[in-house]
Length: 140
Image 1 (cartoon, helix red, strand yellow):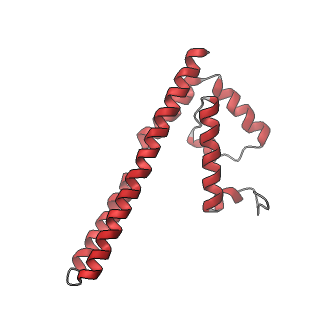
Image 2 (cartoon, helix red, strand yellow):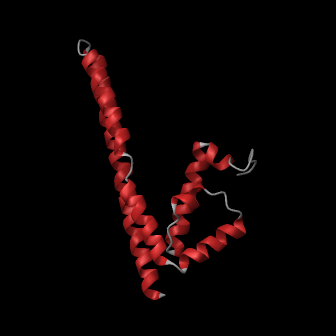
Image 3 (cartoon, helix red, strand yellow):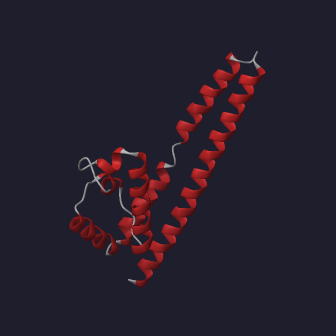
């Protein structure tokens, strides 16, 4: 960031977090590693970050375990279910107003489609990363 407001500045903005996550995704694919949740929450200095990447390169099994934990955790289906339930409750309470009911239906469709696209992209990335780690493991 050009002018960070502290050590956690990257994580305190949507654009900073999006850029950080894209950077992490690129590093993981490039080096055939997968950071654990603990690694992702750490605020490593650049030399420590580099050392951690090297450690993970030497331990493909650890990377595969971290990736499996992320796959098992899933994308957060519970949030989608809660949002859908709230939208159904809103629709039931507004069933007398066709325009508002239509708006709620459109919001529900957009939210579900957006979430499913997020899920699809995540799974595609996880498969690519798994293949990359396994190929890195085979070449080691």
